[in-house]
Amino acid sequence: MDLKAALATHRLLAIVRGGDADASLSTVLTLAEEGVELIEVSLTGADALTVIARARAALGDARPLGAGTVLTADDARAARDAGADFLVTPALGEAVSTARALGLPVLAGVFTPTEMVAARSLGATALKIFPAEQAGGPAYVKALRGPFPHELLVPVGGVDEEAARAHLAAGATAVGVGSPLVGDAADGGSLTALRARTRAFTAAVGEAGR
Image 1 (cartoon, rainbow, N blue to C red):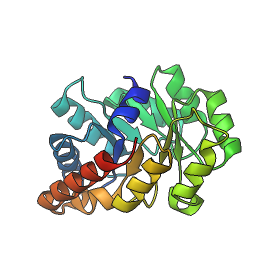
Image 2 (tube, rainbow, N blue to C red):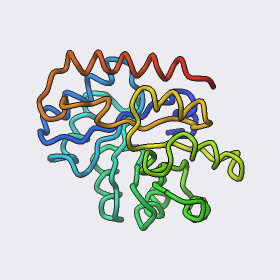
Image 3 (tube, rainbow, N blue to C red):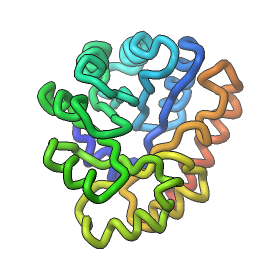
């Protein structure tokens, strides 16, 4: 898949990490039904690889589906085998280089400019600024745009609707959103509430300046 184009076009990456595998699957499918094109299933969630495999079977081969919190080479291979077609890491490490060797695009977690340069040398497709809130929020993204005008930056961590608008206005390519969007849906919470949050986030992202 073309992760660069997908991030630039859709601008919202939903992050699903749940304690209930069936609820996590329902969350993924509900997000997809509501028009969220980029969804990652964190490998720290319950039975995550099975959730990915079931989601892939339900969504078909054409829909992007990612695996998140990919730390090791084994994680990367297992996620690929389960049906993930892009990987997301919380930091730099062997998962990034393994993803590239497998032919998968990777959104690599970075925190500092030095790590951004290292991620580029490892072949990262785009850069996940994590944890974004602790790094300085939208002001940090804006500051990074000076020395890194062409990098695809995706802040993750503490991104609610207001922060999503601000990050995108500051120059972020897209935003990654977990609990402010998913809430308790992946633990068995209301899918009706999830649909409402999804529509609100989709509107916020759509309103943000490009």
